[in-house]
Length: 472
Image 1: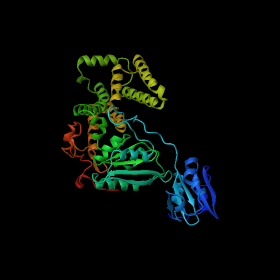
Image 2: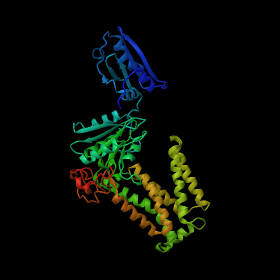
Image 3: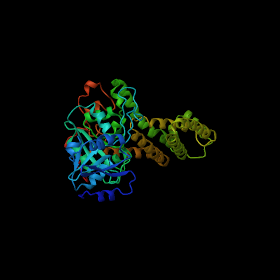
């Protein structure tokens, strides 16, 4: 939309903005109007880049006064307003309009990753500045094949979003899909990258994460070198990795720093922990409710003694304890750091002990729920951990209603759901379906590095492996 730039139009657009500054400076017999927001620029910077050059020059030509600037056309009022709100200083000369980048709002310094900690490997994490994050990537990839495309999303927030990919590695269909989806996003504003990520997913109603999220620069670089596409947003430290598969949610960056034997063991443990976490409590419910004959007599006697005073059926007992664990987890996460962990540990011990002594829950169930709670966080992806927590409730409810038959119904649904899911149009459970033998070398079992010579199939997918764009 083209609108002419005038002082009156600028004042109208920025009316009631307290930090809006518009002042005139005389240069000879002519006037230059300076426009900026004083809360996102520093006085020293604007003095150095704008006021001092103006005061020391008698010329009225921007070429003779300033070294670095960009020009605006006379009908680009929306762009001028956006740039002023982004930290630019705009100068209105009589015959031209220029802008100088004077943004100087404070940024957080680079620190170690708190959500994706590793013992070995780089320890620098992304921050809220997309320019800083891109510099961390380009420090590791010094190639002109690293391409970037910028987007402006959010009708109110005007978020700067950048898409990164390796032009000689990334699949063109994937790049086009991401670009098309970003261009079609219509939303009033984004408070973080995870919000935008949800709007780019193929199946928004699925409990499983379809794209990866990371704050680690080394993980991002590895994804780019494997043909993935990275989407980053200014103001958010997270980077979205597109596409991603179910198996990649159980892979940690540290797996590549360890020996292949250790990495394979840890990946197997994470995948086994996923199934144990969703089955353990629900199996307790189904066995006690419908299938007690499956247990050895000694174990059955032990369970009967443990539940002798519990007034609730197993399914209600399990749901109550699971919800108590969720409350403790959420309360510990929201409390101040210095007391959150203490309250979580002490609260869990006190409540668990009191519940057993009062006959509200069996001690065996307390142990099982504690184990499942720990196993749900064994996946490196926090989003997958949340999915495990949600799915576990579905298994418990169906186990209480139909026993192991109900568990098998939910398992069949989950397998069918995963088989039909896609991530950016690519099969979600590749390399199992469709099977790609080369990818199996870097799946649950990670072979020695010199055998992993090919990139993941989900990144180098051919046209027949990628589903049609359908509604896009």
